[in-house]
Amino acid sequence: MKWISGILLAIAIILGVTYLSTDRETRNLLSNLPTDRDVLFWSVPQRDAAFRAMDRLPVLARANVIDTGPTVLPLPPGNPIDLSVDVDKYMSQQRTAALIIIQDGKVRMERYGLDFDASGRWTSFSVAKSFTSTLVGAAIKDGYINSVDDKVSNYIKDLQGSVYDNVSIQQLLTMTSGVAWNEDYEDRNSDVARFNEHEAESGLDVTVSYMRSLTREAPAGQKWLYKTGETNLIGVLVSSATGKTLAQYLSEKIWAPFGMEQEASWLLGSTGSEIGGCCIQAATRDFARFGLFMLGGAMAGEDTVLPENWIAAATTTQASIGVPSKGYGYQWWTYDDGSYAAQGIFGQGIYIDPTRNLVIASNSNWPQATNHATVGAQREAFYQAVKAAVDAEVTEQK
Image 1 (spheres, helix red, strand yellow):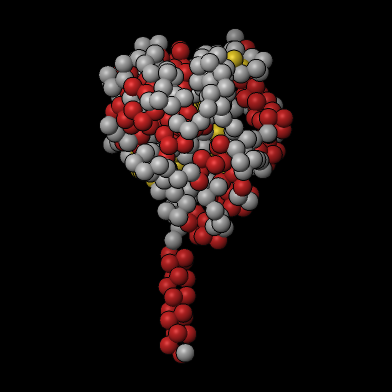
Image 2 (cartoon, one colour):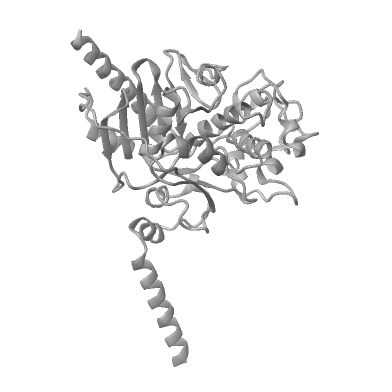
């Protein structure tokens, strides 16, 4: 029995040395390792650890790398912005890991919490939806896709004969397909929860396998309903049309030529394709740079990445969501004042205000996936406070 004890001791020593030799984020993840892959039901400490290291352990998910280029777009410091709100209290309420305000191309505020910093990468959740929809525009500009009026089944042949057979790309982009879906983040039987554990039919992409089994609840184009699964389909569409992974195409069109600072990653589904509706791991500064990319008219290097008028169509209301002064564009949340936002559960966001040349990027770990009455309202109020501060500066300068 002594030899068994010796082997166990050796294993323990190896594991201990491995643990100590890893970086802080990985050690923290190992100490708070989730017991399953369903992020919606992890504890707050598990999420705190995992959100900054989702791509570190293959047991959680595999990922494709989003490569950077040879140059980095500088983010020069600007004058500190004078806000009317208690930023420390706000970040505590939001459980904010990172908050960056860029106005007129300069960093007016950059703050970190939850033992996170500028060198770390945080997962995007549904902020990725706005990246994925932007790649549709790039694919149209490059000639891989003809038009948003095309049927999605023209590009994803395995959808033919399903409820998506006559749904257009535009209806996917605006989430108006009329297909029934349950996005309840607290219901283990919802579509958004069950999708994570779906076993794909043989030979099919996991997203296509799940989505083609759904049923219709309204005629296509007549009802808006938020469906993460449909953004996952948009990701399959882009990959099918371009013949490239989403990570590769994002790097080629935006990440490298625009000058993102850090390599990023994109988590994969069980059949090996990126999850279009979720899970880009990136530095918060690079999320802010994506806001600058949009503000600058989608120029990356010397090239215009998107078709003419794409940004105008994508970031203005295409579908009513039943909320005053807000709507939905091409996977962007829209506001009546011309601003727009990418938003993800647990408090991830990129807010863009063209009128004020303003970008606010934030990553958080809210106590719940979403709560519009509390943390959601606090974030909206913070956006308004930042805009009021910018307006006050303009008035003072006159």
